[in-house]
Amino acid sequence: MTVDISDEMDRNTNFAEAQNSHSNELFSPSAKEKGNEEYNNKEYEKAIEHWLRAYRSCCYILSKNVYSDAPEKDKEIRVLKMQLDTNLSIAYIKLQDYSNAIHYANKALEYEPNNLKALHHKSVALFELCEYQTCIDCTEIALKTEPNNSLFKRIRYEAALKQKQYISKSKRIVSFRFFKCRNLTSDRVRRYSAAPVPVNLKKIQEMTG
Image (cartoon, rainbow, N blue to C red; front, side, top):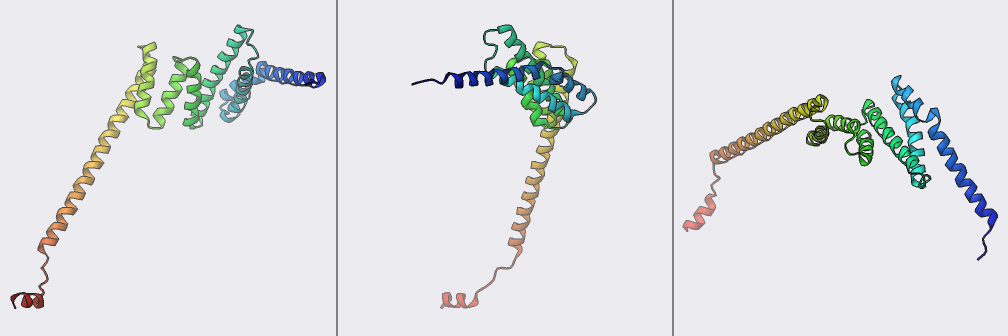
């Protein structure tokens, strides 16, 4: 089989251009810093747009193993991606998009399981989604790293309080429904017992012959 050298060179050139494009975009001030600026200006959607652009560049570079022969550079990209994950997570919280907030917090935690920023964002999002037990579990992970962290203690306390209130309310609802159902059943039995039984005189005459 013959190989067209010019085609192979074109493919290599295209790959190199794509690689350089992502690298330039990633390390340009607009890649991450502009997102930070927009976030500080409370332009959360614009911040997400900039951060996602940098995030995709990180994902592309890592997927192509661009820095497989440069471990320090590869680690730098992974750390940057984790930082973008935590940034995206808090930005989505600001937009009340808690599912995406949890998604990116989890991505950051895949790289660094005890990342306090990611754990904080995740616990806040879980709290807002009324996932109180999972929220408590999340704060417990953080408190193993920093046992005296007042922020996580407060979130855990609030989540436990809400969970207790929710369970208490659920029990009251179940109890009320059971009581109402029992009363309805008793009422029906009383009405049935008090109702006159129809007498079939013809049938009685036939039986007594």
